[in-house]
Length: 302
Image 1: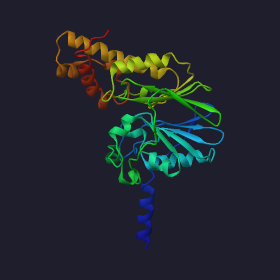
Image 2: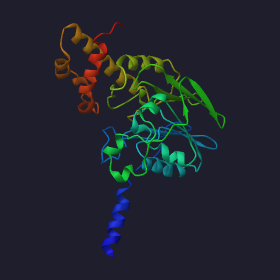
Image 3: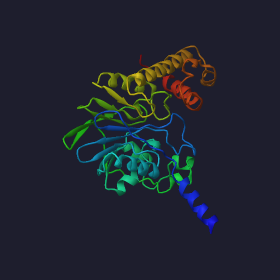
Image 4: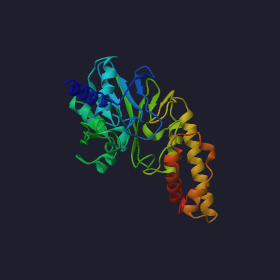
C-alpha cells in the first residue's frame, strides 16, 4: 500500500516541470521569462518568453508557451495577481514553443489570434516537434487546435478602453509571417521573435535581410520597453545584439561569395568568435551560416 502511495506521489510531481513567476515590466504587462537554452526534458520547453496584458476586466495573453501544462501553470500564477477571464490569446508566429498552450486557454473561452502561416504549417491535429522533445508528462493534454482569427495586416483592438495594436510583417523576418503587439499608452512593444537578447536567433524560416529591415522598422517606433521573445533585456540591448549578428552574417557571407569560397568552407571557417558569449551559438550558428550564404548567393541588393 505504501509503495502505491509513493508511486502516485512521484507521478504527480513529475507532471509539474514549470516554476513560473510573473514579472511586471510595465503598468499592465507581465512577463514569464524562459531559459536561454534549447528545449529539453529538463526544462519542459520553458525557453521562451510569454506575456500577459492585464486590463480592468480581463487578460490578453501574448504567446501561450510550449505546452498545455505551461499555460495552466502560468494561469495559476496570474490568478494570484487578479482572477480575471482570459479574453484573447495572440500567437506571434508559427514556432511551436510559442503557442502550444493554446488549447488550455481555448477551454476557458479565449479567442485565438495568429498568422495564416501558422495555420498552414500546423493544421488541426498535426504533430508539433516540441512534444517529442519534452517529457510525456509535461506534454500531456497538449494538442494542435485551430486559430479563431488571423492577423494579416496592421490592425488594432480595444479591450476595456486599452488600445492594443498588431504590427504585421508582410515580409519574412524570423518566419514567413510575424506579429508584434504594441501598447501605445505604455509604449511597450511585445516583439515576439523579432527581438532576441542574450542568445542568437535562428533564420531557418526567416531572412537576414528581413531581420535587418525589421530592426529599422522597430527603431522608428516610440518604445520605452522592448519585450523580447527570448532573453531578459527590455531596453535596446536586443536591437544592438541582433543588428550586430545579422550584419556580421551578411558581411561575411557576401565576402565569402565574392572571394569564391564555397558554402561548406564558409560554414567551417567563418570567424564569429566575437559572439561566443551569446547562448545557443553551438546549437544554431552553423546552420545560420548556411542559410545566410544561400540567401546572398544570388542577392542583387545593397
